[in-house]
Length: 485
Image (cartoon, rainbow, N blue to C red; front, side, top):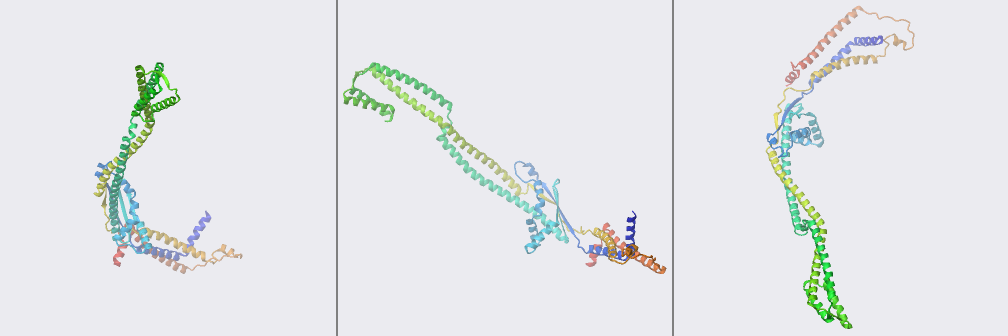
């Protein structure tokens, strides 16, 4: 505590000893900062409030039309308003574009920094502000920015609506062509192999089973007839047998081709009899009786029925093997057709939706940007904050004055006390106190009082300027502006 108190008194003595330097330097710094604050140009702010209004028509047609919501538009608002494209258009409109890519880029960056956007998504409001030394420029820039954004937003939505209508129409044409091709493919397949896909496999199985049973019965009956014919015997020569076989061959050739098994068998019998005639062994027992003819005729009928049943069984089995492939092919064709049909119908419904949406965007019936409070010419500047600058100047003056005193003491290498004398290594024999002149002290006291009074009056003037800026009763900036103008 004693060391701290000693340091405090030391610094207080230093300030008191160098009070002129401290006071004058502090007042000079305060004065410089105060004057500088009035040399700074006034900053004016222009504001515009825009309300994003949800249309009643949009709510009525909800689910029928597709339109961007107001919340979606507000989300991208800050990015759209500060976009390079939009700012460039506004600068062109106000004839503020600078030549040179670097200068233009710098200007756009400055405009982005000076533009403020405050969004109130809950109420559907957004406020655009712009600060500049020119109140007219601030007003014109804000109004142009809002107007250009609304125009670009509306035109872009119209272009999107027209583009959507065009795209849907093109896709409908393409899908209609594909659907027609699929319909034709299904019809062609049904007219050909597709008829098998509609057959009932259980009925085919039953038909094959019944035919097989009938075939077995026919074969049993044929065996019985052959046995009966063998018992009757034949009493004819080989020549008569050949004649009978040739007659039978002619009858069969009228109904079947030469590859028919029965025809081949008759030909083999005729060939065998001819060989027997040549060798002289062609004599059989006579047997050309009516009963024999009847049995032979019945046997031929049974053989014909057997051939028909065999063909029917083979045909049905072939159809059974073809039905799964035909059904699979038909299912694939119908699935593709139904898929394209559903897509076509869905897109056809969307065409009506997009048409209504387009009309809403063209007539601005979806979401309306309403400028509630357009920017007006600002009269009262919002900056600089001179009261804050002056207050900082006062603190800087006090700190600067004390700092200069400490700097002067630091640079002073003279011996100031006994402790400093001891540092040189010389023995201190005695300390002679300073002899003060009373008249000189009185003169110094009068000078100090004059300094304090003058400094207090000057500082009071600075405080009065600060108070006028805080209360706003007297605007010194306006007064200076009137005098200079």
